[in-house]
Image (cartoon, rainbow, N blue to C red; front, side):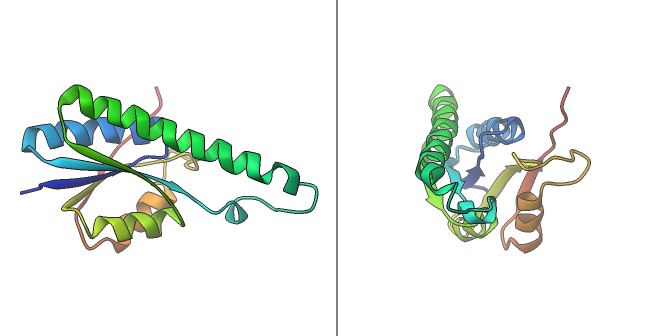
Length: 146
C-alpha cells in the first residue's frame, strides 16, 4: 500500500503531532519516511529595508537552526520507533517544495495548521494548497489546542 511517506514539519505543535501520527502509520505499514522542513524566502514574510539588512543574515541563520531542530526532533522519534528515515532542509515556497517532493512518495502526512495558522478554525494555508494541488493522497492530522 504505502511504502514511502513524506512528513513535512515546520516545528509547530500541529506539525509535530502529524509527524508522530505519520511515524506510527509508517511503523504499522513497514514504510520509510522522509522528513522535510522548508525555509521560505524572507522577502515573502518581511518588509526589508536598509534598517533591517544588518539583521537579515542572523534571522536567516536562526530560521535554519529552528528547521534543523524540528528535523532533529522528528528523526529522534523515528529512531526510537525503528522507522527508516531521511531528513531534508530545502529552500523555497513551502507548498511548492512539498508538492514537488510528494512526487517521490506514496502519501503526504501533514498537520492541519502550521506556524502561520493564526486561526485554528480554518485549515492552514500551506496544508490547504497541498491538499488542493497534490496528485498523491494527503493525510491531514487535526490539531486543537487544549
